[in-house]
Structure formats: C-alpha cells, structure tokens
Length: 144
Image (cartoon, rainbow, N blue to C red):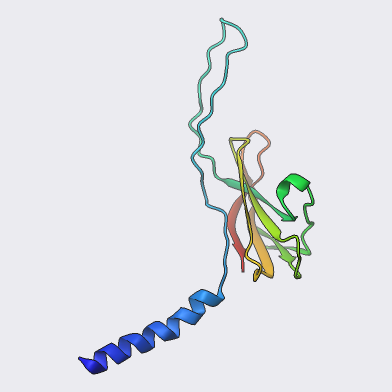
C-alpha cells in the first residue's frame, strides 16, 4: 500500500509542473447567443436562421480591446488548405488580450492572456468561409 501511495505521489508530481507551466488560451469553438430583432414595420416578420455562432476570427490586442490597439500577425503562411497566423508576444506592462469573433452574430468575447503567454497561433481553413461576409472557418486557436 505504501509503495502504491509513493508511486501515485510521484506520478502527480511529475505531471503537475507540466500543467502549471503551461498557460494556454483558446477561443471556444462556439458560443450561445440570444438575439432579438425588431421588425421595421408591422408587415415584416422577424425569424432566426438557427445557424451556429462558430469562431470565425481572432484579434490579439496590446492592452484592453476597448483601446483598439490590435496587433498584426508576425508571421502568416499557407500550408495546404490552412492559413497559419502567429504572434510573438514580448513582455508588456499593458498585457495582451485575445478577442474571439464569431460568425452569424456581432457578439465577441475577449480575455486577458496570462503574463507567461509568449506566442499565439491561429489556424484557419483557407477554402471555407462563413456566409454573409463572415470570416474563414477557424480550425484552432492556441496561445501559450
């Protein structure tokens, strides 16, 4: 029993630093949005498409998004059907923010990145776009 306890403690210690050392952030693939529209006149009827609000774009900001200091990616490359954008993030007293934009809604979500985050990478499908002027379909967002 004692040996099993030591093995479990050793395993927990071996795994814990990996989890604590990695501060990762990613956009949720979808968000729940409740929209409410008003008909412009009595002879119009409002309906809703029911399309999913899936992540369709990402912006990295130097400081809070309200200050509009968005950063241009440091690198962008195409690999097959994917466009890969990356940002290298030096230390900043203002902090960096990740903003996730979604298709089929004007809703956006944002959060401050952990100070330990030094890189963000966004992978989008270059051949797929959301309708209605939406952005490319985002495959993954990873800030670590």
